[in-house]
Figure 1: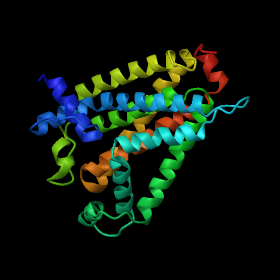
Figure 2: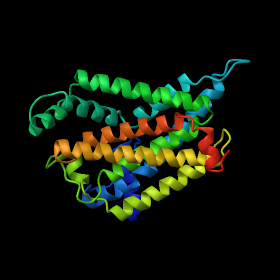
Figure 3: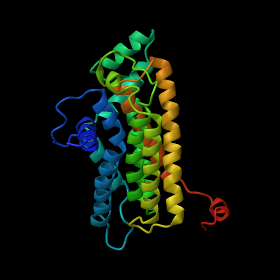
Figure 4: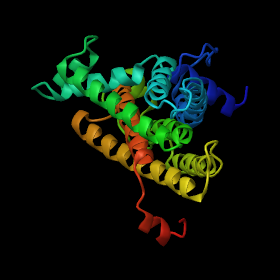
Amino acid sequence: MTAPVIGVRAAVTLLTVVPIRGPERLDRTTARRAMLAAPAVGFALGFVCALVVLGLRVMTKPPGERPQTLLPAVVGLALIALLTRGLHLDGLADVADSFGVRGGRDRMLAVMRESTIGAFGAITVLFVVLIQVSALSVAISAHRGTVSILVAAMTSRLAATWSCVERTPAARPDGLGALVAGTVRRRDATAATAGVLLVAALAGRFDFHGGDDGRAVRAVVAVVVGLAAALLVRHRLVRRFGGITGDTLGATIEITLMVCLLTMAMTIPTSILRFLGLA
């Protein structure tokens, strides 16, 4: 089995519920390959969910009225949560709960290990999911829902790649964070980013609902903005916890997904499009 295939299989087993047999041994080398393959897994998740969003939009359109947007958005994002076992939302809740306790780093890490979800975690997950659903619904109404969920799913998994770059410490000596922290070379993460930008541009240009240069630019901007948000979140969490954990990776993924969807939902002023020669 070749190294890329091993990395993809490891990424699929770590990031989804797809029932494939993973590598027999999960060491740091395999973990590095898995984190590099994370954007590819994000593409697959986004593509499947985009098809579901498109299908629901077609099948739930009332005669003589505009197609539904809220139901496809809810189902599309629920499918991502289902395919990922809700692990990233759980990580977001755990990280949010740790921000609501008093005490030092050890106390916060202990709270993140607890299986229960507190008030901070529940409220954070509630509003993050509401924003994600609302933003995707707006994007769907603007006929760019499929490219939005595809780009957001890819970029949010690219955020996990960048969260594991060289010199990134682990907050604990065990767990997923210790396995993947610092494993990814920056040049490899940069190459993965270039790939995501290219796919995003092509998705915007050839989107089913009427791709054009403007949508290609929007998709690229969403990747850049989402990744910038991911790096800021990563920096903040590393400073707070002294490194990364599996929970911080999940939180970063969900926040990046939210920011990408918000970016895709926003309207670019006509004056800017004209300046860029796209209107």
